[in-house]
Each structure stands twice: as structure tokens, then as C-alpha cells.
Amino acid sequence: MPSRLRCVAPRGPSDRGAERLTKALEPRGSSLEAAGIQVVCAEREEEARTLLLRTRRFDVVTIGASVPLNERNRIALLAKSGHKAGIIFLYRGSVFHAEVADVLLTADVTPQDLILAVQRLASSRSGDSRLSRSAG
Image (tube, rainbow, N blue to C red; front, side):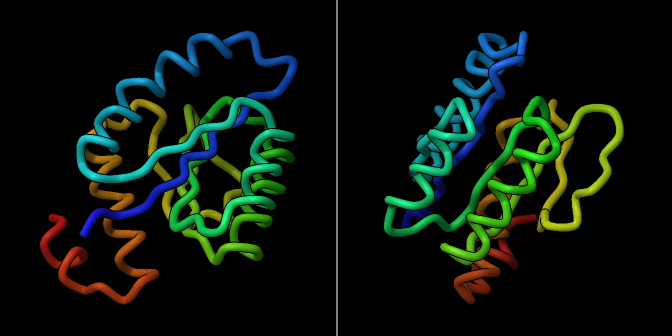
């Protein structure tokens, strides 16, 4: 049974690395999709909020390292309250104010490790212990 993931990775208008962020997500998104996980990405907070408010279900939301702290937390809180979604924060360097995250991963996480984290988080939220035990 394929897992569902809606990957929300917004960027702010001042993010100079936006093109790099989009390119960095492509291999991860492809790897997640190859593992049977649905992926939907947003590039801005406004777009992420629209997805979260209009889409029926999100199991896991991944928020990238370049997303400003205040945006990251607003998106995560909306996803948790509206969808009961698991939250993965990607970070670079140090991480702070990440209390809302269920999982913290470095921004250079491998696609395979991201897949495992998504599967574990999704299975823990759905009560499917098979994935949790077999994922590492």
C-alpha cells in the first residue's frame, strides 16, 4: 500500500537560493515518488497555506532548511491542526524553535533516509507498525 506524502517546501520572497532549493528537491521528490509516495511541493508560504487549506489529506509535511523560522512554524502548525500531519524539518547548521517538528533531518539527507523517515512517520501516525519495524 503506497504511502501518501504532500511535501510542502515553501520559500520566502527574499530567498536567494530558491532556484537551488527547487533543484535540490527534484531528486528527493523523484525518489519519494519511486517509493510510492505522492509528492506535492509549494514554493511560497501562500501557496503552502492554500494547499493545506484546500487539500483533503496530508500525512507528512516536509519543510526545507531555507524557509524562514516564522513561516516554517506557521505552516507546521496549520498542517498539524488541520491535517494531523507529521512534520519533518530539514535544517542546515543549527536548529532552534523546532518544537513543532516530529522529525529533524539535516538538509543534506539522502533520498533513501528521507524515504525511511517519511515512511516511519506516516506509519506511526496511521498505526501501521509493519512499516515502523521494517524501516531500519
